[in-house]
Image 1 (cartoon, rainbow, N blue to C red):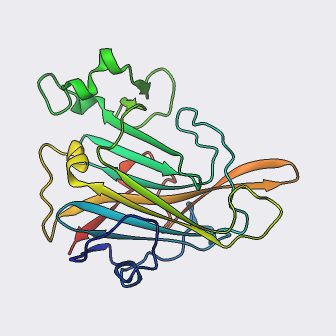
Image 2 (image 1 turned 90 degrees about the horizontal axis):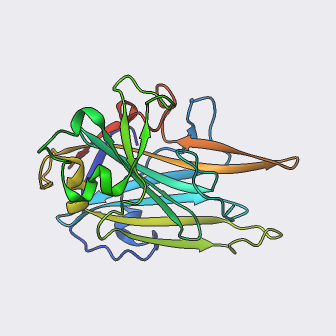
Length: 252
């Protein structure tokens, strides 16, 4: 799918992990994910699709996998040593990241750029109170650095009324059989997405969203494990935490 379009659906979507529903079968899908640097296709077929209605933005992920398992490792700063599918959404002053593992574990982070955190401004509210929430600081004395400057990372923030469902075609965490795939279905209400903008998000055809999606696959070889990051298209500098790399998707 070269066109970055998100079609409106007039069919109510029940988030149950079933991506064989007609509404998803008829939705536009991305091309097969490849390595984030564009060097080659991912080892497993991975694709994503988006839909929208008045209530929410919907995302579906199809992830081929012959050994569906979780590493059960926890996130350390920006590193996520786990098999996941991931969604990134950016606004002018902040961006949100969501990673979902096959067992349903998720990691959410909300990043606010220092230059957009102003007294009396959009993010000067109890939900993002720096003294109370004690977010991590990125881009100060230690990295990762970015030309825009410092950002705060709120690791305890949760997307309001987020819905996630997973369907596994295989046996989770059974390592001695051959699995087929796992699928993830998400609904992100516009109220939560509005946190990235100056006011309530009122979706209408023609509205553009800055999005990226990815899959992290932990590859095991000779007793070592290393992550491979796959995306629908190569990112200019290979950095999913640089929103200038995201693509503009238009609601149609």
